[in-house]
Length: 221
Image (cartoon, rainbow, N blue to C red; front, top):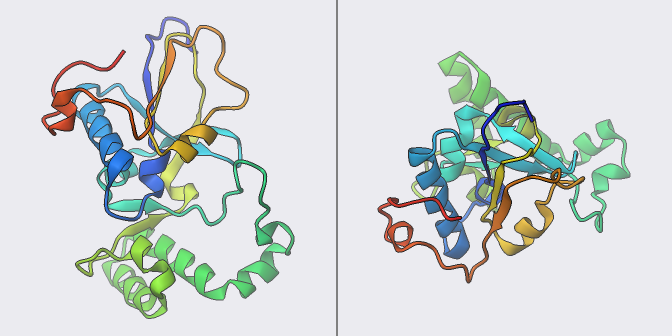
């Protein structure tokens, strides 16, 4: 932590970023909390738990609102199992061979990267049209909205920035799904002096102003 820097709110939006379905239960509650923080606490740092480093990384500003509102989802195909209990097939197969074995997935990922980064509108449109021919039911919910419009499916290299450490005075908010919250604990843990780590589950009671959607009031302590 930089000397003299005031404590921050560090908001873990890992569950929101990974979510692809309608916002129900704890996902809807987390969205309201994140929108509140976005509006009333502009100093909030929004982060994603990256199991490849077993720590938090900053979510790039371009995708913060998209992840919070559900306009985009995080593509975690390449990330390891954070619990360490399951090894992906890619861990046992040479990288080039695995890309060939997963040809459809590889093409979808590379075309999505092109669609999101190209400065040429014609190239972006071509990538979209080509993807739509390749998208099966397995990938539809993550990449296409119910109305047929495209949903951004963002890989780590585009969505995530530098690692984020927790320091004295910081408040970590983990308001995600129970399973995701359980693994979204930095390793090693925050240094002694971290202000708090605020977590919630499906049974957590939220302020009535947040439940009603007005997003007014004070930050939970």
